[in-house]
Image (cartoon, helix red, strand yellow):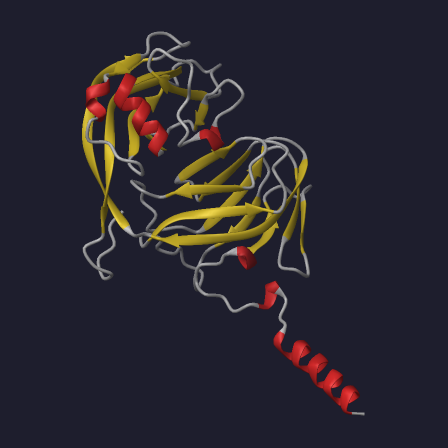
Length: 283
């Protein structure tokens, strides 16, 4: 009898304490529950009992979440990034879109994708979308914001005008320009997309360690099979976080930059500095 009472009490305790992931309290950072619809009416999505979302994607449709608060856009200037986590590696290239402000591209086979906000105006965000480049099924495990913890100070390391065109030209940033670089810093390219040819529909960057074919590790998740990163039409900046290995190789050999249909005018080394205090957040 005592064993039966103990077993019953244990079952009740587990039943009362266990909550499905979908019922966990919103801590203000988790956005998964905000994704309720798709941009393409021929797509579909389901909210699963474990809190995940199964998205049946069509090419360049979109799983979309409304971020509005009381029907008004929200201010994300106190956050560093938004991240999607997937239950399985992606089968096709994917892309995060934050309103019409910025996009981040992800290659095949990744289990998470992060869109960083640094340098962008995210004071008025109304929606976030996840897009796939082809028909597929994506199961989203989690979508969350990361609070900002640093400011970024630009240090110019190259200036000029390089018109990539159809892989023409390119330029070298000498090794001594990376003397002050540290792991966690970012490269920032200031550029315009060349839209003079109406037949051009994509724009690319290729950044490799000078005199080698080795791409940088920091943006490996967004590189296609040719080692190129895609940027969106109308973009004006492109950033690459640097790993410790990236920094060591750049200090040794420098960087070669090339691409397709972009016009680059400056490259900065963005140095990460801690925030002065918790009350002042600048990206």
